[in-house]
Amino acid sequence: MESILILDFGSQYTQLIARRVREQKVFCEIYPGNIPVKSFPKNLKGIILSGGPSSVFDPGAPLVSTEIFDLKVPVLGICYGLQLMAHLLEGKVVKSQSREYGKAILQLQKDSELFKDCPKTFQVWMSHGDSVVSLPPGFEPLAKTESLQFAAIANKERKIFGVQFHPEVAHTEKGKQILQNFLFRICKCKGDWTTESFISSSVSRIKEEVNNQKIICAVSGGVDSTVCAALVNQAVGKNLHGIFVDNGLLRKNEAREVLETFKKFNLNIRLVDAKDKFLKALSGVIDPEEKRKIIGRVFIEVFEEEANKIGDIKFLAQGTLYPDLIESRSFKGPSATIKSHHNVGGLPEVMNLKLIEPLKELFKDEVRELGKKLWVPEKLLKRHPFPGPGLAVRVIGEITEKRLNLLREADAIFMEELQNSGSYDQVWQAFSVLLPVQTVGVMGDERTYENVMALRAVTSLDGMTADWAKLPYELLQKISNRIINEVKGVNRVVYDVSSKPPATIEWE
Image 1 (cartoon, rainbow, N blue to C red):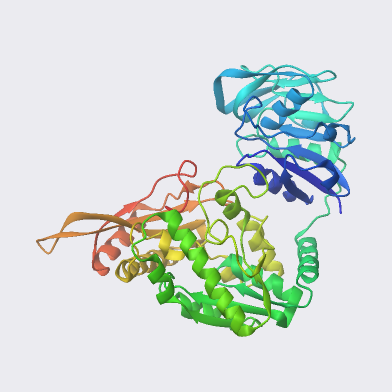
Image 2: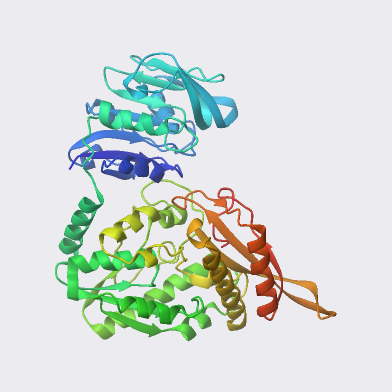
């Protein structure tokens, strides 16, 4: 199978590059920039060097072997990738007077396969602090901006290209066309990688790794874990043992609804009531990172206990997605940690089960598409994302049964009204957050001093970026009135109007 290799230098957009490549039905893999050339995948059609937060002048800046430029494989450097390429091939890179961030107008100077079918000028998205001021031998400029002499460069003979802007983001008007040109005109890819081929290759890998042994799968009733279970089930059949853990951090009536859903699947699912164990471990804990790590640890303890009951279990399957990984730690490159996820950064260093994570390089919308092919019900696939740590990261501050119940009731009202209004499917994710704040109110001519509930609803494609949802005022008013009137202990409701970035979607 033909492959594009993406070398990661720490950009938060690295997986977005991969996403754009896969949208063209071209298979790609992400590896750290310092991977030895001998470890490159077979049938390599092209290499993309990602952006990154570093400067080529930083001590310990991520580098790449210059051998890649002698492989006679097309190379595209993006942002830091361009600067690194110029620096290693004897061009000159300097620190800019000021960081250039945001929209710029690109002016094409020469015809190039990279910019085929692009207009002479169009908008691009910049995000850099260094600039190339002298080109390496054999390179020529392809485009400039008002403030940048070398916004795109190429060594056409060696098929090495570089762009200072980010073609993978939506703000670059012809970004899709540029990447298509690189993949099909320059790398000569066929574009024959599909969801069906992903299923086939994943099933083969799981079969080979598990080798007819038993495997347990953590299921929550959410999209990720359900699709993961359906995929693993295709590979191992009766050897899959699904475990649904009621950790006391679920939404209202969720345990019952999840079990009813899985009755429709031919999956072996068992319910484990571990509410007391989780809530005891979380007692008095306020720091969100500590919450996540505790939940990760206790989940593994529960899974290992259940594995011992089943007997001879060596594998644990999880529905981890790439946004979880990129926010938790550097998965395959030097990206900065934003927050730990209970099923990634929160896992203990030593555990007795080997992880199987077949979805770990996919975005949510890709998982939903995969679920359709695996015959997962559409109603389930349209469920909003729900964090693995559950309500623990939506109860800000100390976790108690009383505070969890306040949040459950408010969130149930929020979801009900979104469904009734037809707004549920129009937003990527919506939920309530209980704040560690009490405010003065007036109810029935009496003073109250009660809790504040925040509502969060966002629109997004893949969870990597998001904007706050512009819900109708009348709907927000109805939700607010119902929560205050029906949830005893809440006297104020607020709406979160932050985008990601700079905020994250979840509050913790």
